[in-house]
View 1 (cartoon, rainbow, N blue to C red):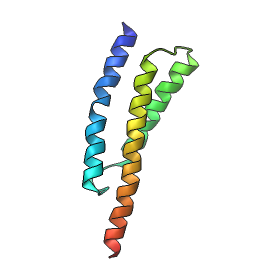
View 2: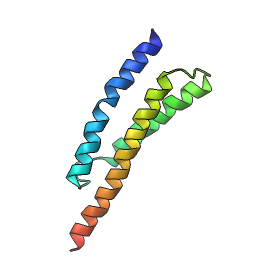
View 3: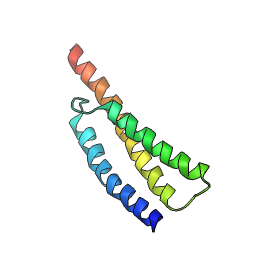
Length: 92
């Protein structure tokens, strides 16, 4: 039961990332998005993955950690792209 609840938590968090990614891709600006927040969430998911590996509890739940981690990574990459676009617009 604990693993099911953990998986449901990760699914609930994970449902928001596609919307965030789409918004970042369409907005083409880094304004209003905190890279520090994204990095903190990314680090949290990495800690969750490390916890599963360290405790030798490699269950299906790790898949959700990895999916969420990948989506946050994509959002970080979009933030970097959008920051470059913002800088290019500011120059000219």
